[in-house]
Image (tube, rainbow, N blue to C red; front, side, top):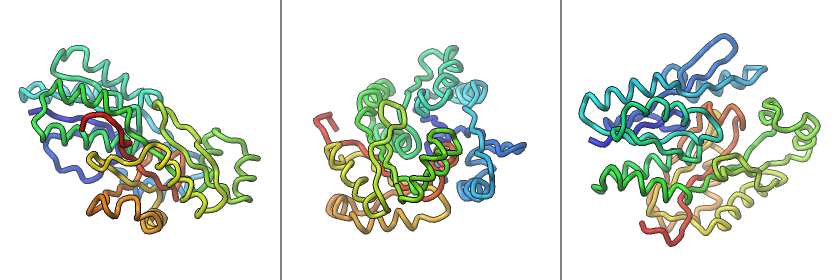
Length: 284
């Protein structure tokens, strides 16, 4: 069997597949340590985040955890493709490679160059390729080529958590709050980039939609995931209703996902995002 291994930054919840293993990232609130998705649900995370004065700390998956997973795969006579959070955002990719050194062709590690629902989309793509009967090597090759087509764009509801994380100044956060500034961000070449800023949620939603158009549109033959941060998906459902022309004639149902602590720590509640493969000339 070909097994897919990923980390919990992929925000895949309720996994019941035998061929998919999700290793938890550690999230620390003060003196309390939690395993993302094991003893800390997304709802629990946001309840704690809202109550906390300081940001929690996230820690990469350790090489030992990967090594244990690889050993299980090898003992069963299987092979594993590992899809990690972007190496520019976490040391998890490095941990996966350190652990893989002794496993030769049994394990191949792929840097998703993405996070959260973007990483989720690449994992789902790997599972689809596997179900289509592609070989181990063919799946790895396709992932390495097609991952560059994944786009993740998101609209933030607040600048407070960027301020807490030291990514913007207190003055910028205060000015943004007074003007109701909603930044649109993306993952580009494995890193977070700000694409634009809008005043108010309506302009923000329109800017998010505009960014999707600018990428060349959505390839609906490949995985397409919408995500939200916080305790409610109300803002996401409004976005879906306001922009149903994007997908109404292309898909019967939309996959939505809550975004957990790895990204939620930095963007806070109320954010919405879209992850998709851009339409292009790459072979399906």
